[in-house]
Image (cartoon, rainbow, N blue to C red):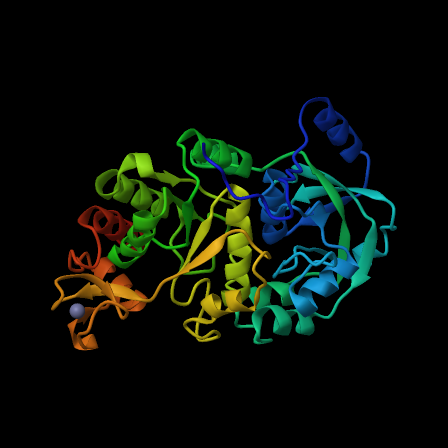
Amino acid sequence: MANLVSPHGGRLLPLFVAGEERKESLEEAKLVPRVRLSSKEASDLIMLAMGAFSPLDGFLKKQDYESVVAGMRLKNGLVWPIPITLSISKEKAATIKEGQRIALVNSGNDEIMAGMLVEEKYSYDKRIEALEIFGTDDERHPGVEKIYEQGEIYLGGPVQVISEGNYPMQFAEYARPAETRALFTDRGWSTIAAFQTRNPLHRSHEYLTKIALEVCDGLFIHPVVGKLKAGDIPAEIRMECYRVLLNNYYPSDRVILKVYPMEMRYGGPKEAILHSIIRQNFGCSHMIIGRDHAGVGNYYGSFDAQSIFDELKEDDLYIKPLKLDNTFYCNKCKSMASLKTCPHGSENHLSISGTKLREILSHGERPPEEFSRPEVVDILIRYYQDEGK
Ligand SMILES: [Zn+2]
Protein backbone atom coordinates (compact mmCIF):
# COMPACT_ATOMS: atom_id res chain seq x y z
CA MET A 1 0.00 0.00 0.00
CA ALA A 2 1.54 3.27 -1.14
CA ASN A 3 2.13 5.83 1.51
CA LEU A 4 3.05 9.31 0.31
CA VAL A 5 4.63 12.07 2.39
CA SER A 6 2.17 14.55 3.95
CA PRO A 7 1.75 17.94 2.31
CA HIS A 8 3.62 20.86 3.91
CA GLY A 9 1.71 21.93 7.01
CA GLY A 10 -0.35 18.73 7.03
CA ARG A 11 -2.94 19.10 4.28
CA LEU A 12 -3.33 20.28 0.72
CA LEU A 13 -5.08 23.61 0.45
CA PRO A 14 -6.05 24.23 -3.19
CA LEU A 15 -7.66 27.66 -3.47
CA PHE A 16 -9.45 27.07 -6.76
CA VAL A 17 -13.20 27.42 -6.26
CA ALA A 18 -15.60 25.34 -8.37
CA GLY A 19 -19.30 25.02 -9.11
CA GLU A 20 -21.77 27.38 -7.41
CA GLU A 21 -19.03 29.00 -5.30
CA ARG A 22 -17.10 29.85 -8.45
CA LYS A 23 -20.16 31.46 -10.02
CA GLU A 24 -20.73 33.59 -6.92
CA SER A 25 -17.06 34.58 -6.67
CA LEU A 26 -17.07 35.62 -10.32
CA GLU A 27 -20.28 37.68 -10.00
CA GLU A 28 -18.87 39.43 -6.95
CA ALA A 29 -15.48 40.00 -8.56
CA LYS A 30 -17.17 41.88 -11.40
CA LEU A 31 -18.44 44.50 -8.93
CA VAL A 32 -15.33 45.26 -6.87
CA PRO A 33 -12.14 47.26 -7.62
CA ARG A 34 -9.60 45.51 -9.82
CA VAL A 35 -5.90 44.97 -9.25
CA ARG A 36 -3.73 43.89 -12.18
CA LEU A 37 -1.27 41.09 -11.52
CA SER A 38 2.31 41.00 -12.77
CA SER A 39 3.19 37.77 -14.57
CA LYS A 40 5.03 36.56 -11.45
CA GLU A 41 2.00 37.29 -9.26
CA ALA A 42 -0.36 35.60 -11.74
CA SER A 43 1.75 32.44 -11.77
CA ASP A 44 1.99 32.49 -7.96
CA LEU A 45 -1.80 32.80 -7.85
CA ILE A 46 -2.10 29.66 -9.98
CA MET A 47 0.34 27.87 -7.67
CA LEU A 48 -1.99 28.84 -4.79
CA ALA A 49 -5.01 27.69 -6.82
CA MET A 50 -3.59 24.22 -7.44
CA GLY A 51 -2.47 23.74 -3.83
CA ALA A 52 1.24 23.76 -4.72
CA PHE A 53 1.87 26.47 -2.11
CA SER A 54 -0.03 24.65 0.68
CA PRO A 55 -0.59 25.66 3.44
CA LEU A 56 -0.72 29.31 2.26
CA ASP A 57 -4.30 30.59 1.92
CA GLY A 58 -3.40 33.70 -0.09
CA PHE A 59 -0.79 36.44 -0.41
CA LEU A 60 1.27 36.92 2.75
CA LYS A 61 0.21 39.35 5.46
CA LYS A 62 2.73 41.50 7.28
CA GLN A 63 3.71 39.25 10.20
CA ASP A 64 4.20 36.22 7.97
CA TYR A 65 6.06 38.33 5.40
CA GLU A 66 8.48 39.76 7.95
CA SER A 67 9.00 36.39 9.57
CA VAL A 68 9.78 34.76 6.19
CA VAL A 69 12.19 37.51 5.17
CA ALA A 70 14.02 37.61 8.50
CA GLY A 71 14.02 33.93 9.45
CA MET A 72 12.75 31.71 6.61
CA ARG A 73 9.62 30.73 8.57
CA LEU A 74 5.95 31.67 8.68
CA LYS A 75 4.88 33.16 11.99
CA ASN A 76 3.52 29.73 13.04
CA GLY A 77 7.08 28.35 12.74
CA LEU A 78 6.62 26.43 9.47
CA VAL A 79 9.58 26.72 7.09
CA TRP A 80 8.91 29.08 4.16
CA PRO A 81 11.92 30.55 2.32
CA ILE A 82 10.62 33.09 -0.24
CA PRO A 83 7.66 35.42 0.41
CA ILE A 84 4.61 35.05 -1.86
CA THR A 85 3.37 38.59 -2.23
CA LEU A 86 1.03 40.89 -4.15
CA SER A 87 2.30 44.42 -4.79
CA ILE A 88 0.58 47.62 -5.92
CA SER A 89 1.62 51.23 -6.37
CA LYS A 90 1.15 53.79 -3.56
CA GLU A 91 -1.43 55.62 -5.66
CA LYS A 92 -3.49 52.48 -6.25
CA ALA A 93 -3.13 51.46 -2.59
CA ALA A 94 -4.66 54.78 -1.50
CA THR A 95 -7.92 53.72 -3.22
CA ILE A 96 -8.16 50.36 -1.39
CA LYS A 97 -9.19 49.90 2.24
CA GLU A 98 -8.32 47.04 4.57
CA GLY A 99 -11.36 44.77 4.91
CA GLN A 100 -12.38 45.42 1.31
CA ARG A 101 -12.81 42.81 -1.41
CA ILE A 102 -10.97 43.18 -4.72
CA ALA A 103 -10.70 41.27 -7.99
CA LEU A 104 -7.31 40.11 -9.29
CA VAL A 105 -6.98 40.52 -13.02
CA ASN A 106 -4.52 39.02 -15.54
CA SER A 107 -2.56 41.92 -17.05
CA GLY A 108 -2.22 40.10 -20.36
CA ASN A 109 -5.91 39.76 -21.24
CA ASP A 110 -7.89 41.43 -18.39
CA GLU A 111 -9.39 38.10 -17.37
CA ILE A 112 -10.64 38.01 -13.76
CA MET A 113 -8.50 35.34 -12.09
CA ALA A 114 -9.52 35.58 -8.43
CA GLY A 115 -11.38 37.36 -5.67
CA MET A 116 -9.41 38.51 -2.63
CA LEU A 117 -10.22 39.90 0.78
CA VAL A 118 -7.64 42.60 1.55
CA GLU A 119 -7.00 41.99 5.23
CA GLU A 120 -3.85 44.10 5.33
CA LYS A 121 -1.92 46.59 3.24
CA TYR A 122 1.62 47.36 4.29
CA SER A 123 4.86 48.90 3.12
CA TYR A 124 8.13 46.98 2.94
CA ASP A 125 11.81 47.56 2.26
CA LYS A 126 12.79 46.27 -1.19
CA ARG A 127 16.49 46.30 -0.44
CA ILE A 128 16.11 44.29 2.77
CA GLU A 129 13.91 41.75 0.99
CA ALA A 130 16.50 41.42 -1.80
CA LEU A 131 19.42 41.03 0.60
CA GLU A 132 17.68 38.52 2.89
CA ILE A 133 16.16 36.37 0.15
CA PHE A 134 18.77 36.58 -2.61
CA GLY A 135 21.86 37.50 -0.61
CA THR A 136 22.43 40.49 -2.88
CA ASP A 137 20.82 43.83 -3.73
CA ASP A 138 22.38 43.84 -7.20
CA GLU A 139 19.56 44.63 -9.62
CA ARG A 140 21.25 42.60 -12.35
CA HIS A 141 20.12 39.53 -10.38
CA PRO A 142 16.83 38.57 -12.13
CA GLY A 143 15.02 37.88 -8.82
CA VAL A 144 16.16 41.18 -7.32
CA GLU A 145 15.18 43.02 -10.48
CA LYS A 146 11.60 41.78 -10.10
CA ILE A 147 11.42 43.16 -6.54
CA TYR A 148 12.70 46.57 -7.65
CA GLU A 149 10.20 46.68 -10.53
CA GLN A 150 7.14 46.05 -8.38
CA GLY A 151 4.84 48.45 -6.44
CA GLU A 152 5.76 49.88 -3.01
CA ILE A 153 2.82 48.41 -1.08
CA TYR A 154 1.89 44.77 -0.44
CA LEU A 155 -1.68 43.54 -0.06
CA GLY A 156 -2.17 40.51 2.16
CA GLY A 157 -5.19 38.23 2.52
CA PRO A 158 -6.97 35.09 1.35
CA VAL A 159 -7.81 34.45 -2.31
CA GLN A 160 -10.51 32.44 -4.10
CA VAL A 161 -9.17 31.54 -7.50
CA ILE A 162 -11.54 31.43 -10.46
CA SER A 163 -9.12 30.84 -13.35
CA GLU A 164 -5.79 29.09 -13.82
CA GLY A 165 -5.19 31.11 -17.00
CA ASN A 166 -4.02 29.37 -20.16
CA TYR A 167 -1.74 26.81 -18.53
CA PRO A 168 -4.18 23.86 -18.44
CA MET A 169 -4.93 24.38 -22.16
CA GLN A 170 -1.38 25.13 -23.20
CA PHE A 171 0.27 22.11 -21.54
CA ALA A 172 -1.05 18.56 -21.77
CA GLU A 173 1.24 17.80 -18.81
CA TYR A 174 -0.35 20.42 -16.51
CA ALA A 175 -1.13 18.72 -13.18
CA ARG A 176 -2.16 19.70 -9.66
CA PRO A 177 -0.76 18.15 -6.46
CA ALA A 178 -3.94 16.15 -5.77
CA GLU A 179 -3.67 14.65 -9.26
CA THR A 180 0.00 13.67 -9.06
CA ARG A 181 -0.61 12.17 -5.62
CA ALA A 182 -3.36 10.02 -7.15
CA LEU A 183 -1.04 9.01 -10.02
CA PHE A 184 1.77 8.02 -7.64
CA THR A 185 -0.64 6.05 -5.47
CA ASP A 186 -2.11 4.26 -8.51
CA ARG A 187 1.37 3.12 -9.46
CA GLY A 188 2.03 1.91 -5.95
CA TRP A 189 4.94 4.29 -5.45
CA SER A 190 5.83 5.67 -2.03
CA THR A 191 9.34 7.01 -2.68
CA ILE A 192 9.42 9.47 -5.55
CA ALA A 193 12.38 11.65 -6.56
CA ALA A 194 11.53 15.04 -8.06
CA PHE A 195 13.72 16.66 -10.67
CA GLN A 196 13.37 20.41 -11.12
CA THR A 197 14.47 21.79 -14.46
CA ARG A 198 14.36 24.88 -16.63
CA ASN A 199 16.67 23.51 -19.34
CA PRO A 200 16.67 20.73 -21.91
CA LEU A 201 18.11 17.58 -20.35
CA HIS A 202 21.56 16.50 -21.46
CA ARG A 203 23.39 13.32 -20.48
CA SER A 204 24.57 14.76 -17.15
CA HIS A 205 20.98 15.57 -16.12
CA GLU A 206 19.83 12.17 -17.36
CA TYR A 207 22.50 10.57 -15.20
CA LEU A 208 21.38 12.54 -12.10
CA THR A 209 17.78 11.43 -12.57
CA LYS A 210 18.83 7.83 -13.10
CA ILE A 211 20.90 7.78 -9.92
CA ALA A 212 17.66 8.81 -8.19
CA LEU A 213 15.68 6.19 -10.09
CA GLU A 214 18.07 3.48 -8.85
CA VAL A 215 17.01 4.19 -5.26
CA CYS A 216 13.40 5.42 -5.50
CA ASP A 217 10.15 3.81 -6.71
CA GLY A 218 9.56 6.53 -9.29
CA LEU A 219 10.94 9.64 -10.91
CA PHE A 220 8.95 12.87 -11.27
CA ILE A 221 10.37 15.16 -13.95
CA HIS A 222 8.84 18.52 -13.16
CA PRO A 223 9.94 21.40 -15.38
CA VAL A 224 8.98 24.97 -14.56
CA VAL A 225 6.98 26.54 -17.39
CA GLY A 226 6.34 30.04 -15.99
CA LYS A 227 8.06 32.96 -17.66
CA LEU A 228 11.86 32.60 -17.71
CA LYS A 229 14.65 35.11 -18.11
CA ALA A 230 15.86 36.23 -21.54
CA GLY A 231 18.05 33.61 -23.23
CA ASP A 232 16.40 30.59 -21.55
CA ILE A 233 14.87 28.06 -23.94
CA PRO A 234 11.06 28.38 -24.31
CA ALA A 235 8.85 25.82 -22.59
CA GLU A 236 7.37 24.31 -25.79
CA ILE A 237 10.83 23.46 -27.12
CA ARG A 238 11.94 22.03 -23.78
CA MET A 239 8.79 19.91 -23.58
CA GLU A 240 9.62 18.39 -26.97
CA CYS A 241 13.11 17.58 -25.68
CA TYR A 242 11.76 15.98 -22.47
CA ARG A 243 9.20 13.86 -24.34
CA VAL A 244 11.70 12.52 -26.87
CA LEU A 245 14.22 11.73 -24.14
CA LEU A 246 11.67 9.92 -21.96
CA ASN A 247 10.27 7.97 -24.92
CA ASN A 248 13.69 6.71 -25.93
CA TYR A 249 15.76 6.37 -22.77
CA TYR A 250 13.54 5.86 -19.70
CA PRO A 251 11.24 3.01 -18.62
CA SER A 252 7.77 4.53 -19.13
CA ASP A 253 6.29 2.85 -16.06
CA ARG A 254 8.81 4.45 -13.72
CA VAL A 255 8.72 8.10 -14.79
CA ILE A 256 6.06 10.81 -14.80
CA LEU A 257 6.48 14.16 -16.59
CA LYS A 258 4.30 17.08 -15.44
CA VAL A 259 4.73 20.86 -15.47
CA TYR A 260 4.11 23.69 -13.01
CA PRO A 261 3.54 27.38 -13.72
CA MET A 262 5.77 29.22 -11.23
CA GLU A 263 8.29 31.82 -12.35
CA MET A 264 11.88 31.14 -11.39
CA ARG A 265 13.39 33.57 -8.88
CA TYR A 266 16.94 32.28 -9.51
CA GLY A 267 17.25 32.37 -5.71
CA GLY A 268 19.76 29.52 -5.33
CA PRO A 269 19.61 28.03 -1.81
CA LYS A 270 16.31 29.61 -0.73
CA GLU A 271 14.68 28.59 -3.98
CA ALA A 272 15.95 25.03 -3.45
CA ILE A 273 13.91 24.96 -0.23
CA LEU A 274 10.86 26.39 -2.00
CA HIS A 275 11.24 23.85 -4.81
CA SER A 276 11.32 21.10 -2.18
CA ILE A 277 8.19 22.32 -0.36
CA ILE A 278 6.36 22.42 -3.68
CA ARG A 279 7.44 18.84 -4.55
CA GLN A 280 6.45 17.62 -1.09
CA ASN A 281 2.99 19.00 -1.85
CA PHE A 282 3.00 17.13 -5.16
CA GLY A 283 3.71 13.94 -3.18
CA CYS A 284 7.47 13.46 -3.62
CA SER A 285 9.72 12.03 -0.92
CA HIS A 286 13.04 13.16 -2.41
CA MET A 287 14.29 16.22 -4.25
CA ILE A 288 17.33 16.11 -6.49
CA ILE A 289 19.60 19.02 -5.62
CA GLY A 290 22.59 19.20 -7.95
CA ARG A 291 25.35 21.70 -8.30
CA ASP A 292 24.25 25.37 -8.29
CA HIS A 293 20.54 24.50 -8.02
CA ALA A 294 18.32 27.44 -9.11
CA GLY A 295 21.38 29.66 -9.25
CA VAL A 296 22.33 32.38 -11.70
CA GLY A 297 25.67 34.05 -12.44
CA ASN A 298 28.12 33.82 -9.56
CA TYR A 299 25.82 34.87 -6.74
CA TYR A 300 25.91 31.51 -4.95
CA GLY A 301 28.51 28.91 -4.09
CA SER A 302 28.19 25.64 -6.06
CA PHE A 303 26.83 23.72 -3.06
CA ASP A 304 25.00 26.47 -1.10
CA ALA A 305 21.68 25.01 -2.23
CA GLN A 306 22.67 21.70 -0.62
CA SER A 307 24.11 22.99 2.64
CA ILE A 308 21.08 25.18 3.42
CA PHE A 309 19.18 21.94 4.16
CA ASP A 310 21.59 21.32 7.05
CA GLU A 311 20.17 24.42 8.77
CA LEU A 312 16.70 22.84 8.95
CA LYS A 313 15.36 20.74 11.81
CA GLU A 314 14.65 17.06 11.15
CA ASP A 315 10.86 17.46 10.90
CA ASP A 316 10.80 20.80 9.06
CA LEU A 317 10.34 19.02 5.74
CA TYR A 318 9.26 15.45 5.00
CA ILE A 319 10.84 15.58 1.57
CA LYS A 320 14.60 14.97 1.70
CA PRO A 321 17.28 16.39 -0.59
CA LEU A 322 19.28 13.98 -2.75
CA LYS A 323 22.51 15.96 -2.82
CA LEU A 324 24.41 15.11 -5.98
CA ASP A 325 27.71 16.31 -7.34
CA ASN A 326 28.49 17.62 -10.79
CA THR A 327 28.28 14.80 -13.35
CA PHE A 328 29.94 14.30 -16.75
CA TYR A 329 31.13 11.68 -19.21
CA CYS A 330 34.67 10.52 -18.39
CA ASN A 331 36.85 9.34 -21.29
CA LYS A 332 38.87 7.07 -19.01
CA CYS A 333 35.96 5.57 -17.05
CA LYS A 334 34.15 5.31 -20.38
CA SER A 335 30.92 6.13 -18.58
CA MET A 336 28.99 8.88 -16.88
CA ALA A 337 30.60 9.74 -13.57
CA SER A 338 30.94 12.39 -10.90
CA LEU A 339 33.81 13.72 -8.81
CA LYS A 340 32.63 11.27 -6.16
CA THR A 341 33.08 8.23 -8.42
CA CYS A 342 35.79 9.11 -10.94
CA PRO A 343 39.49 9.24 -10.01
CA HIS A 344 40.67 10.81 -13.29
CA GLY A 345 41.74 14.38 -13.95
CA SER A 346 39.38 16.97 -15.37
CA GLU A 347 41.13 16.78 -18.77
CA ASN A 348 39.31 13.45 -19.21
CA HIS A 349 35.90 14.91 -18.41
CA LEU A 350 33.62 16.02 -21.21
CA SER A 351 32.38 19.47 -20.41
CA ILE A 352 30.72 22.07 -22.64
CA SER A 353 29.59 25.42 -21.26
CA GLY A 354 26.09 26.72 -21.97
CA THR A 355 27.48 29.48 -24.16
CA LYS A 356 29.65 27.07 -26.15
CA LEU A 357 26.78 24.62 -26.59
CA ARG A 358 24.54 27.38 -27.92
CA GLU A 359 27.24 28.31 -30.40
CA ILE A 360 27.71 24.72 -31.61
CA LEU A 361 23.97 24.13 -32.02
CA SER A 362 23.25 27.41 -33.75
CA HIS A 363 25.85 26.50 -36.36
CA GLY A 364 23.95 23.26 -36.92
CA GLU A 365 26.83 21.26 -35.46
CA ARG A 366 26.42 18.36 -33.06
CA PRO A 367 27.96 17.97 -29.62
CA PRO A 368 29.29 14.43 -28.92
CA GLU A 369 26.68 11.74 -28.15
CA GLU A 370 28.28 11.40 -24.73
CA PHE A 371 27.14 14.95 -24.02
CA SER A 372 23.61 14.96 -25.39
CA ARG A 373 21.23 12.44 -26.96
CA PRO A 374 20.93 12.85 -30.76
CA GLU A 375 17.11 13.12 -30.59
CA VAL A 376 17.43 16.10 -28.21
CA VAL A 377 20.16 17.66 -30.34
CA ASP A 378 17.92 17.51 -33.44
CA ILE A 379 15.25 19.57 -31.67
CA LEU A 380 17.74 22.13 -30.34
CA ILE A 381 19.50 22.61 -33.69
CA ARG A 382 16.11 23.27 -35.29
CA TYR A 383 15.23 25.75 -32.53
CA TYR A 384 18.48 27.74 -32.73
CA GLN A 385 18.43 27.79 -36.51
CA ASP A 386 14.81 29.04 -36.57
CA GLU A 387 15.73 31.62 -33.95
CA GLY A 388 18.69 32.82 -36.01
CA LYS A 389 16.47 33.50 -39.07
ZN1 LIG B 1 37.00 8.74 -14.82
